[in-house]
Image (cartoon, rainbow, N blue to C red; front, side, top):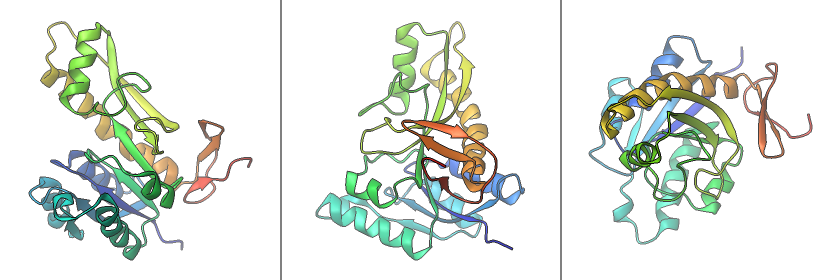
Length: 220
């Protein structure tokens, strides 16, 4: 029997999406296993979530490294030591270099709290996103899972979910509604990857029949 997809999660905060992925894997809804969690913030609750589930958790404080290269090398070494087949960014508040992204090309995904390509890009994260959505007058928002490329929030979209923007919403109330959608969408996107159902068609992601863990090579 093939080993389940080995997932590594990078998070900077509370780790609610990490928990959603862990739970879906353990419930059997996703044929994968979270094998390591890494945070650049030593006090991040994401690390505690992982430890409570018996998952190796590492604090790699970016402020303790003399360069981005050294920081990313430390993160990469941990991921490779755990033989990770998919890297999930879950509220990881560091923009990764093209070199790092290239090392995991086609095997690294992120979740963004809006409907990309709107309200994305450098500096658009957390409350800033929800404030921008409310200021725009948009009637819907949501979340997006996408492959990570060298362009922040610019990679091919895997899946999206929508939520209404309600009268009287604040950034906090909208964020809570979007978070609920994230916790459903992210595990499902991991499932599609684990089942080998994702195929790149130029800049688009197509969903096809299961082929085995990973991203189906372009042209197949």
